[in-house]
Each structure stands twice: as structure tokens, then as C-alpha cells.
Length: 138
Image (cartoon, rainbow, N blue to C red; front, side, top):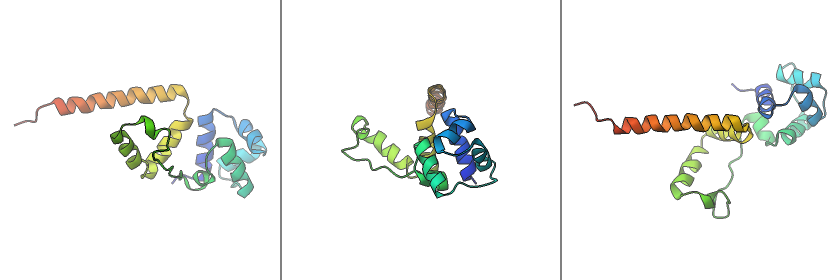
């Protein structure tokens, strides 16, 4: 099970911050951050609010690992640039908590990690296309 401590540590590392960096941004000492990440203590309500602001995530994500479902509709600027089938796939994916967390991870990932992920996806797509091209054994 993913804990608040793990989410704090993972988000901090995704941002490329040290514990001291996070401490400054969340108005606590580096020792407090260390204690949170090692599960020696847990952040209180004010700390969660400060952490959420520092990481630019909802407090709900820190506490429960859940990202809110954004509404996608005609006024959604991203939806305007997607084909209907692409939008349908994204809407289906965001119904699943694992994908919502994945999308969040992507949103805070450094560019080199995103490029690596895109290359990996290209390999997977090519493999799937090759599977489709093969004739079944008779």
C-alpha cells in the first residue's frame, strides 16, 4: 500500500528537490521532512495544505492517492484537439485510479523521462502491430 510518506518522497524526487528544498517550500525543517518520509511522524492538516501547494497537487492525492476527475467537455481546451476516439480512451482510462496516478506522474515528470516513455510506447505499439500482422497457426 502506498503511504503518505511514499507519496511525499516520490513527489519530491520527481521534482528533483532535496529534503531541504521541500522543507523550505513547505515551511518546516529538513528534519521534519525526513521524519515524514521515514514514517516517524505524519504531516498535520496545515502541513498537508502546504505540501499540496508546494507540489501543486490536491491534498486528496497526498492523503489518499486519488486525483480528482476533471470534467471533459466542449469547453475543455484539450478535448478540442483530440479525435473522439482519443477522448473516449482518455475518459475510460481516467476512471481507473492507477491511470489517474500515472497521468499525474507524467505531468510532473522531467522531459527526459517523458521522451523515454514515448520511445517505450513506440516499441510496444510496434510489437502489437507485428502481432496483428502474423497469421494464426493452422
